[in-house]
Image 1 (tube, one colour):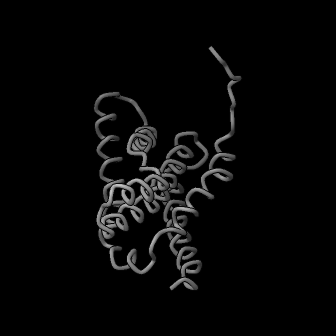
Image 2 (cartoon, one colour; image 1 turned 135 degrees about the vertical axis):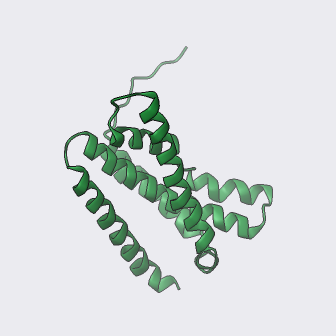
Length: 160
């Protein structure tokens, strides 16, 4: 049986080197006009459902494992609700012939969900690791979200 050595990559390398090209490819193939028209369902699914699911898992874990820090439970909740792969969300529904609006919503939800989940887990892990207090984590989360929205608007401006 063939074997390989285990490859250990720091998460910063994976998040900084491999993930951005995949997300950029998926974002490049998305339809900006249709995404704007379906912004409501996209945001409701990507942000709302991610938060509801992560907080539900966090509450369940807090009840099941007494003494577990809430930030650790939230980080695990976000990991469990890990978003769908943006690349598969753009290719699989198109292959099976799903309606274009459904494909657009799935593409947009997948891209936004990645950002929401990655941001939530990064802040929760930093709080658990003691790198920042909870209040700073909330402020950092809000700062990241606002900067992400601003960056997205600036980058999307030429495409609209």
